[in-house]
Image (cartoon, rainbow, N blue to C red; front, side):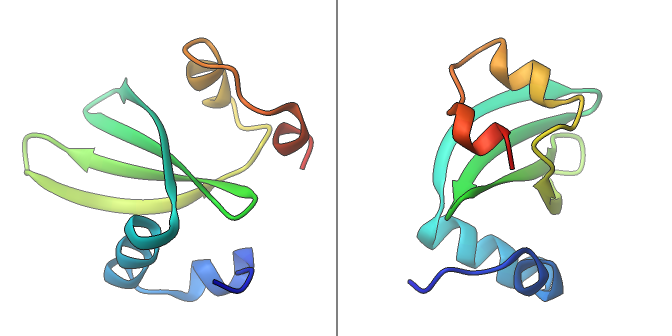
Length: 88
């Protein structure tokens, strides 16, 4: 697949983001955060979070995760994230 950009990804519908991510992304780890199970994926060279609401039994949103977001701490506590991606 050609390299996709943040702008392109953000312009997709939720259904399109999910399809693209599940076909081309690599699952990294899952965390629990408030009422969500959040799955972290690596798509090309950026991280994407999938917010799953257990109570509603649905994916509510799919968002790019900025490398310096405070939630990165929750992920990096569980696994070793590549340093070159964290610097973006």
